[in-house]
Image (cartoon, rainbow, N blue to C red):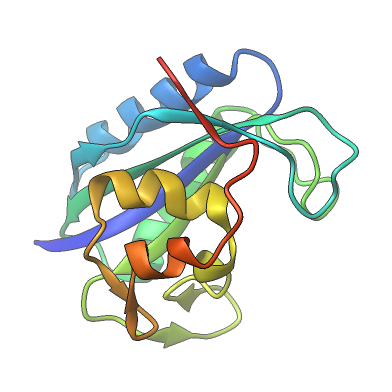
Length: 158
């Protein structure tokens, strides 16, 4: 089994229910066991800012799946939950991103690991720092990367 970290986000409908359902379905997927989950965080939209606020979370999984198979499992769950990709960085029912996969560096047309934007996005790093502050990505820990970013508007949801 290999440790991997995933980021989840939603800004359409019942965001908390969507995140919870995605985590449940990931945990029910053969070869994936959810071993850590952050709180949910209310975050401002990023990229395309003319949309509703997001709810974001991070999970740690133990997996027997390859990095690409883990990506495909996440994409299948997104599709099953109704995700339609209409515009880049636009509104979404659910988003599941593979952020880091222990020992893997991948760069192809389907997957880049570690995720190419993980160290630039506080909405990803805040929940990830809750469950894996010492995880090293790109030569620095999650906590070190987060310390360089503006966390304005990112608040935990109880």
